[in-house]
Image (tube, rainbow over all chains, first blue to last red; front, top):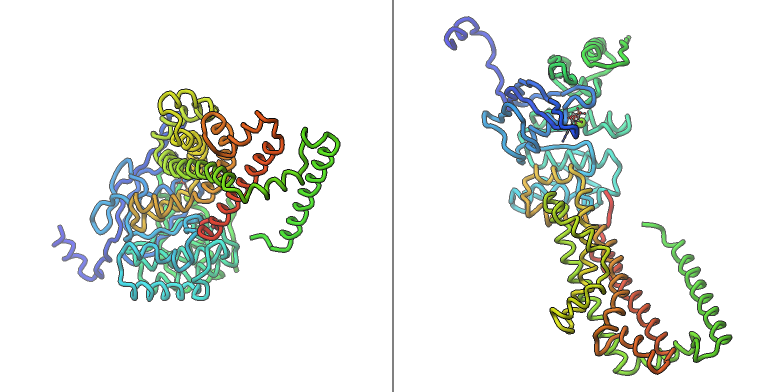
Length: 275
Length: 255
Ligand SMILES: Nc1ncnc2c1ncn2[C@@H]1O[C@H](COP(=O)(O)OP(=O)(O)O)[C@@H](O)[C@H]1O
Ligand SMILES: [Mg+2]
């Protein structure tokens, strides 16, 4: 079969490597009333190495559940998630997680110590650890704030600490669950731009969860739309073929925006026209 | 961190309140006669006289030792028990109902049975104080553990922290503010229970001093005991609070 494929499709550039693969993933929860609810249903998906995938969907459709399974915080009830071909079992530092809530930081540790937390467990040499911490503090614009405690930082700065903490650990895959959802619009825009640049520079594979269409289109090279039960989970899967850095006020952006708006089951459906 | 300025005002007002209280007490003493109700001046003079005697210091030392030992050991036990209760649901569920039951039983009610088992040594006194302290601290901590943000625990796990690291490095630091609250509350409780315990079985101690004053109608000695107890409590609470503020500063911060 592969010989045939090779014969007929000789000019296809080699397919990019798969970093993460969802094979028939399902997740069931038991409600208090004992009835079972299938939150995640038949998810089959392959993530390319170095790709930036946004998972878009209304709240309650199972985005966090999906990410928790990749992070290893929860086990799928059905199917298998494979990373580099091997099934995921439990959490691990090769999958870095950025949470929506800043409670994920340790309030009793300074910014520097928060970033050092994961590195200490990797038993890096002291000098390398220091270097990495300072590199990443600089990358996220926190070099002046290393000695501060999280309680002394703004919401945007706290999310920067989370991002630096995860990237300093040099994970293969970055998992982000609505990391900017609680920020004001201005700060969110800055952080989106910075994250986009950082991830392209570091060449990380990213799984980014959001319910914000604009955010998805600013960041992702591919967007999947999730729907609530009982519809099938993955409703749409489309590439975003726009050059980086992205600009919002362009026609292709608006077209994709409207397309995604149609896909999301939004009770307040209305088309937006730009230009 | 609240600013310093209002603090000095509050301090002054607090002092004023204390002075008012002392004044009223003195007036009441004048009206009733000094052997019925000794005034604050008389009690304070007695205090300054007594504090220079060895006997008084031994009395205070004996009570302090009991309270602090019972409170310290009880807190430590309560802290560990509370964390395990909060962390492992099944254990918490098993132990929670019996604890609710024991929580309403005053330590003093257990004295007779403990005397029969253990005799009237120091152990029993420390045990009785520690019992109450451990219950309060454990219940406080168990609830605090359940309130630790799931994201914080998940973050630690995903960075490679095992159960032991999570226990010492995440759970304990996360519940320190609650622990302080529980420990300060139960410190007051420990001082309250010392009087009852010492009246039942003790050679020396402040509780014993208060109780035996009754025999010779020494109202001033009884009040000296009360004053001593209050001062001991305030001193211990201040030391504990300062120690937490100095050594536990970073753990008292909120994210
Ligand atoms: N531990 C759980 N037990 C029971 N139901 C859960 C649990 N976690 C999530 N759910 C339910 O699963 C659904 C999807 O949740 P979630 O993945 O958090 O959605 P999203 O992140 O897309 O908003 C919700 O209806 C939620 O109530
Ligand atoms: Mg969610």
